[in-house]
Image (cartoon, rainbow, N blue to C red):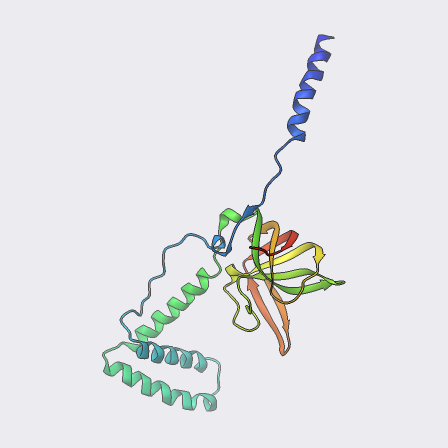
Amino acid sequence: MMKLVQLAFLTVILFPAFATKAVENPREINWESLLPKMMQLKNPFESLNTGQLVDLETIVGITKLKQNANSAEIKEALDVEITLRRKMEKRGLDVDTLIQEYLNHEAEIIRRNRLTNKELDGQLVRMPGYALPLEHKGLGVTDLLLVPYVGACIHVPPPPPNQIIYVTLTDPYKLRGLYEPVWITGRLLIEPANKSLFLVDGSADIPTSYTLKGVKVERYEE
């Protein structure tokens, strides 16, 4: 009898402990939160003036063009490259070294633009941004891109992949228009995606570094 009483007492103690387990509250984050901590990228072209940097960028552009265009298309560009090379070399600049430094710097920026904050993986978050719809169901949106500013991906180039979130919604949400400011609550995952955004004059593939399983959408209010 005593053992039954003890067991019943233990059940009463344990059951409320499970029943009253703390509800997970979403962590409010912003766009800066998505970026990992890293050392500032050094500018390898501090010694160049504005004109020299423009000339270097032009030469790099022509270098890339030569890899894809035919001889007829690049003849005029080659004349420009020769002129700019001579101009820079007269200033004592090593053009080939500068080109390689430019390409290395560009590659490092691209790499950094895909880096993510590992601490946020799997976290329940609440995030503000502008909604760019991808998929509709009835009168609502089920898939969207969350971007940090109006015009992103359509009127101006897309932000880096780690500054775009691909959102899938549990329930369709009726947007009032493109780039509606919203708060979205959901489970954030480091799950890269490449989504097709259909435009008036075609479509564009938008790479993203994060996926958000959205469960709640609210209109943004300060």
